[in-house]
Image (cartoon, rainbow, N blue to C red):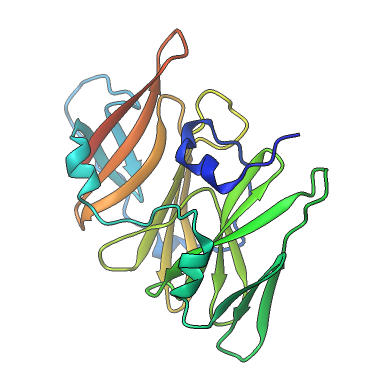
Length: 246
């Protein structure tokens, strides 16, 4: 039996995760982003050349690791003691329980289930995103994991496939996961919108040709990604790319 503990996050391409259907509101038709940009150029494009995110068509261009690393973003943190110390008394570890103090005065408690079966779940506090008013929790299970967002207002939870990366204006965030070889989990990304205190799922996309370890906004009009590519011999390689809108 395999339990996915937090250190396994740093080898994200081999991570196994149970797919979860986010409990969020879908955007209505009049709130959806514009249709993808259409080009008149007659060329054959592949998933390694372009990608559509939130209705916008992006060209995939080579970038450097230095350019990617220079962009601030949320990272997995293996020291729960350190992250809880930053929570100003609103998050507490009580043995197997992770306790959150909500705005309404109540407590939200996540209890580890260390049973040796498919119900195994172990929670680790990762931090707080003030723009979203949600705490982030790593949930490691039996051959799966998720990142769960806990609302500071009412304790409601949203399960996502990866660490949330916030847009510069704080109105969107994107979660991604790379799992090309194992294939037990969704290999792709989820795009969300945060509007009027609620989270809406804008897009959920599975990818076949590359695995998105992380996708971050450099600025409002451009994103950078750390991707995993697998060759015919099932050997992995890392590529850093710039996503430039057409």
